[in-house]
Length: 131
Image 1 (tube, rainbow, N blue to C red):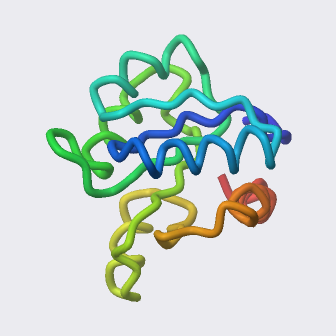
Image 2: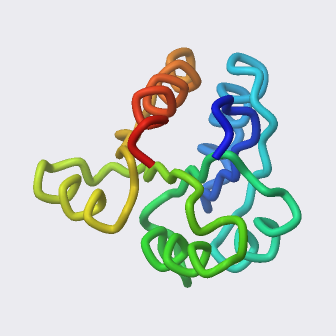
Image 3: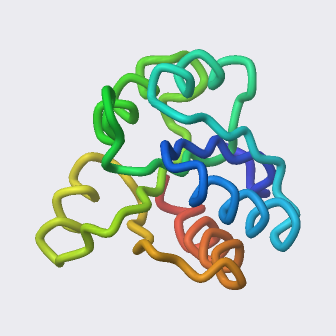
């Protein structure tokens, strides 16, 4: 695992949310972003992109976030990449369930575009020692 966060594989099916997050993470945060609209696309892209972090929407048509994460974990080089879910489902028991699936954090939607990159960076640095 690298100690610096540069490349994020971002999976989100809503074009409006994709656009806002892309600006927040690329323009504001300075990250290199690979945006995918669904799980299958993310699985196809992950092996070539080699992200430092996975940022996944939970509720998507077809393959949802937890299923996408479990499929990504089967790919060589992706099995230990830290993952964050982004979802409107942030009740404590839901967050606990998501963390049991292996994500390091759950970011609530709607998110603040001006602080998203900082939040991601903070979660990343807090979890560098625990992976």
